[in-house]
Length: 208
Image 1 (cartoon, rainbow, N blue to C red):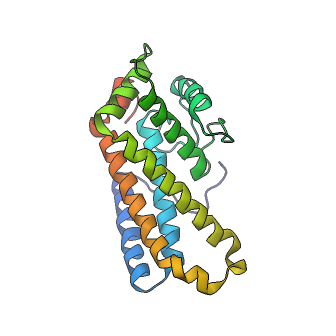
Image 2: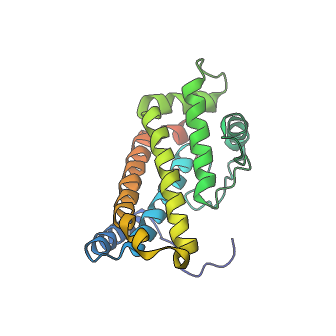
Image 3: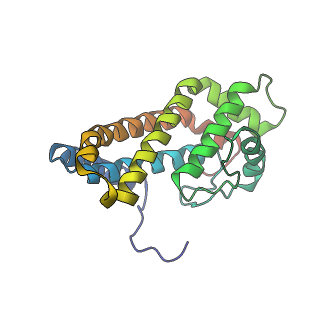
């Protein structure tokens, strides 16, 4: 991944501290109408929670992984992505951006929803059972669509800010800044449900 410019978190306590500090910054940004900073924090939290989702479904070997590197599970999920991804989406399993993460999450949810029989494969059966036992799959699929719409708005702001009419921009920016955090909190709650007892990683005897 190359040399890091900024030191990463050291452990879970450091991660919790970082989260708390950035949530506090978000609240100050909203109160002070610094909506661009708020959207930056929203996006970072969505990226992080989607990445954690992939960790807890055992696609990452460790919390430090920056790509899908658990080949034993990735091979099986790749086949699911190829079948259930939306038209035009990649099945490369690349997670360097938020869209790549969402493709994997959405595809596996659609697979769990639409496959009636429990798969013979051990990993896939554990995954499906955990999805069905802990998640509201329908609601999560709807929220993923909301996140995709929110990200499209965020991308317009970030990549074409100086080509946007200021009045039009400011009409939606406060709402979008708050909606981004609402979606991030929703994803955080989904991850907490999914990782209950760390069942998937424990069943596969992976490091926790």
